[in-house]
Image (cartoon, rainbow, N blue to C red; front, top):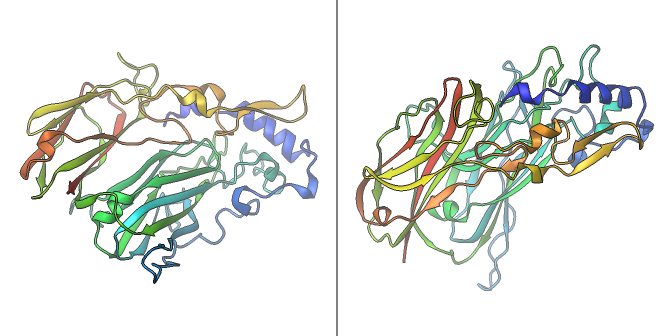
Length: 396
């Protein structure tokens, strides 16, 4: 992210005055944080561990009506910025995927924070000399879910990225993501789910909490029944960070026999604080328009420019405090500077999912060995692109 555009000292100072000094007038009746987490709990129920796995429900015996399954993965698990604590910047859990097929499967995610609502500061005030509650992460961070990541990234294959999102500036987030094809393409049994938020603390507590973190809940909701498509393969090809414009790979890909259609999913978001250069409206690569060339077997199949200019839609202007006093903020990103929340970016917005680009090229249906590569038009020093690529093959 770009800390320079995200500092909110004036907002923090106003909150300290309005809430800690009793300006809200809420007293002991201040509401709880989103999801019922008591103010200052900082991830109670999840700290020091990963989520559990389990299921409820099952297929009906009459063969007509399917009973939905609910598989709990994480329940208010604390992802922390403290490298000495469990779940530093990520949490992992094992879950049991039942036998399919499935008519639909979705990953339901809820992200909670102690930064908001602001009334909770009365019972969880910033430490002396700081501007934010200690356990509040007021920044926007990468927020990613993946399946079956290898213990050693060099061991491969990479994990299957299910969700690419960005946390709000200090606010809660709810996501529901369709993972039906992935679930129908995986073997039943144990799988490892990983949630990653590269949260960092601010020791001085001026631009974020001095021990900030996030509370993550995730459930897989599945409806057994006929699959929408016959999934022949789900093949993760890449999931990592790219810091130069050089092409990775070529990555090997084997299209199975019987493939009649396919989907290549390519997720790409730009980040970092590199120098502003041509094609950038701010620090690279967060604010840079780059062209990505996608190549299969050495031939270009698509040319894209990952960029979002709809971030202003994630700012419902809201007022805190009495009329004529207090301050305005974005409801979806309560701790962010309004101009930063609204700014266009390299294919992401604070508090939003970045869906994949997807293609079904002729080359990706022909059985046999193929290669995948991509090429960036430029990449500034100090910038980074988070990229993943997954291939899915479908039969009749």
